Amino acid sequence: MTLETTIEKYFAAWSEPDAAARKALLEAVWSADGTYTDPMAHAANRAELDALIAKVLSTNPGAKFTLRDKIDAHHGHIRFYWTLTFADGTEAPGMDYGEVAPDGKLIKIVGFF
Image (cartoon, rainbow, N blue to C red; front, side):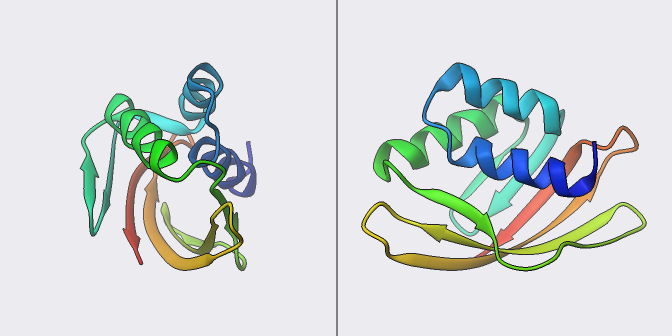
């Protein structure tokens, strides 16, 4: 899987209200022990990330994440800019820094918004 496909599926997971579909997306792109941190939350593994996404989507139904620009990557590190579009059309920009495990799955994301 290319890095672009990995990030596309990661965004799809953040936008997927169906628990089974979201879990399958995360299993495809997220290491079981990968960590996620942003200014408001921390998830210590894939299951906690799944629960965090479910919580975000329950308070923001219809929200969708999209990539704003190209993905910068080198030596297992990544950086990308995104837009969160809410159901009413309001947009919120952000940026994530992360690390990719040797198997190509995401092992760490630190979000800024």
